[in-house]
Image (tube, rainbow, N blue to C red; front, side, top):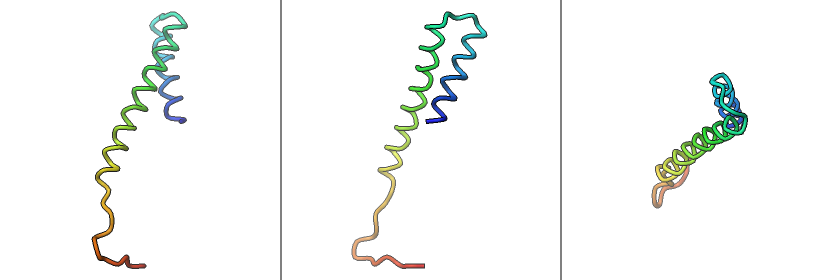
Length: 63
């Protein structure tokens, strides 16, 4: 969550420096934050399919 707030703030600040109106600054920051969240979600979904379960018939070992 903190990452998304940081992205939102950084993008809004960059748009402020360019002289963009307040509403567009906020929208631009939110757009960037949602884009980062969507990208992280896609990586998580792909990663979930790559996780393998235990081998069939195998017994887990304790260390």
